[in-house]
Length: 283
Image 1 (spheres, rainbow, N blue to C red):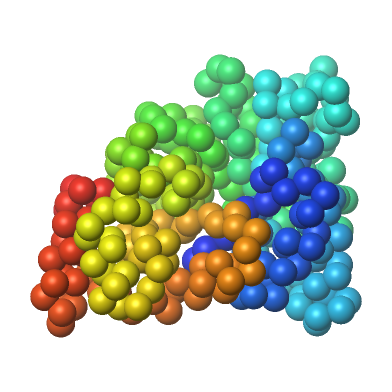
Image 2: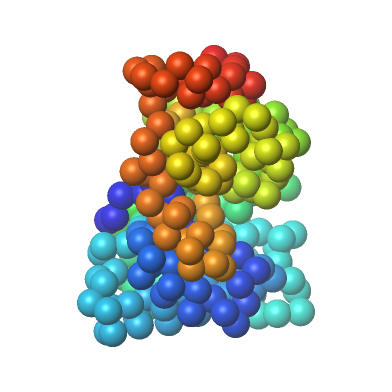
């Protein structure tokens, strides 16, 4: 499994999904996010991209991190084919969804499967979580987690009710929810990978902040690269859904952006980094 420091997001790519995933990987991405939800994703076209990457570019499946999701019936478009029978139990729905994902992706396993959100009740959410646990135990899924969960109590209840800790949380991380500070902190303290979406589009004021601009100018990076790198340095794995090849290259290379939290020699940059840390992480 490839290391996962930044992830290419495939939501809303529709018929362009295959070409964009191929381009993202050729420009440096090694992690891909999708879902068994035709409303917003084309998981089958991600699978076609994986085939092209292996056959035409010698990029093997095992060198990529591939993540998908189980989406409950409330998040599905009922006018399109569903990945499960909605009359089945929650556990059976999860199993059917993951089996459909494996077929769509053309792979024998996925690196991660997430619940797209908590279900309508906590018992149903626990049932779905236990189904993911069974799939993890079978080897078909390597890691399991949940999206769109902004209450730490839900993460705790999943662990207490099942005996297994959530391994990945994927949430909106943006100025509108004060960068999800409570859940981010809980993930850092409990060795849970926190994946962020809306990282750039949801924080236009932060991107335009004088401190971000100062760091970008002094270091020769874009404001987007600065924000992505600061997020990484605080234990966050951002998603990028860019369709621009230049931005793909810039985003995939963010891990190599030279920004330091503690031993920065440039006093102006250090002050700017400290200002952002106080604003976003309350550090």
